[in-house]
Image (tube, rainbow, N blue to C red):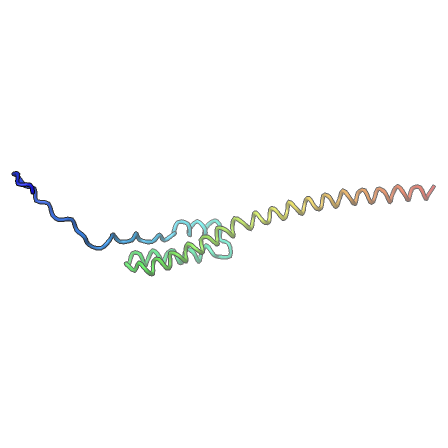
Amino acid sequence: MDTSYPREERPPPKRGSPPAAPAPRDHLLWAIFNTLYMNFCCLGFVALAFAVKARDRKVSGDVEAARHFSSKARCYNALATAGSVLLPLLLGALIVTGVIHLSKLAQESVGFFTYQLSGSDDEDQ
């Protein structure tokens, strides 16, 4: 026990409830980006609607509803981003494979037609 002067009065440490969980993210910026630049099947607009709902619920203090709408906004944002990135890549791959296939087909047909033309010249003589 400390009996020296001057004593410092310290309040006892508070032992209340654990710190509150952080507020959920509303993913509004991501939804705006998807709406403006990569609006695949209007999923960016749907994500924007849920992001705005999540922000409204977060401001009003309804954290559980904000988490629910935030989760939906994240899901639709991910779908819109994946659809807008993967579909052009798939289309590009299909175009490249189609061009390669057509070039091989053209090379084979050139060989076929030159063979027939050379054979018909021999018959005319």
